[in-house]
Image 1 (cartoon, one colour):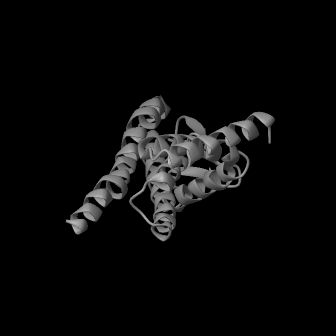
Image 2: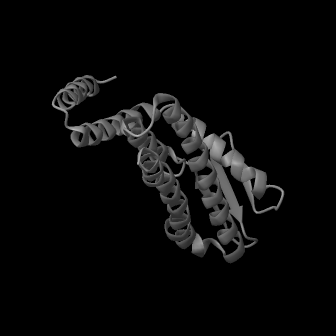
Image 3: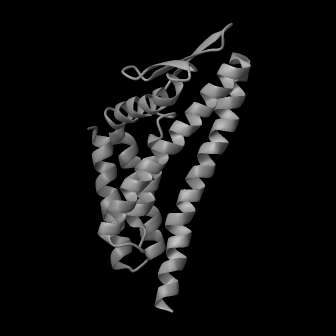
Length: 190
């Protein structure tokens, strides 16, 4: 761990204590969520990315292999798509593994005041599962488009259609957890 991360962590914890004592919940939530996201971001690099990349490629292989859409190398985080004439290999890395989105969700959830600790743990696990499934669906869609239409459609499939589908799933889950959850809890209080 670098000295920069250590100093940043101490400053972050101090800022959180100041906002908590000053009873500034909005600043506490924002600084807490952003700080935790960066902590998760930096500490997820060696292991969590490796686990998620392997898990996602394994999930894709469950559909791609039986339908002969692609060859998946789960141990290496690679998906080789062949449409008969051309081939392309996708490497599932930090961006494609869903780690960033999962870390963002966990960071927001950790400082969201509407849930108790047990509820947060359950929602964190559900969020991990939801982001995983959404990412597998996104990658299967990319594989299907490239396998059907060719490698010239990779950019469209990966950067536009795949991201739109993934973020529709993510925004729906965020809505259910944060907005709908907030409304339901407040409805019970009235």
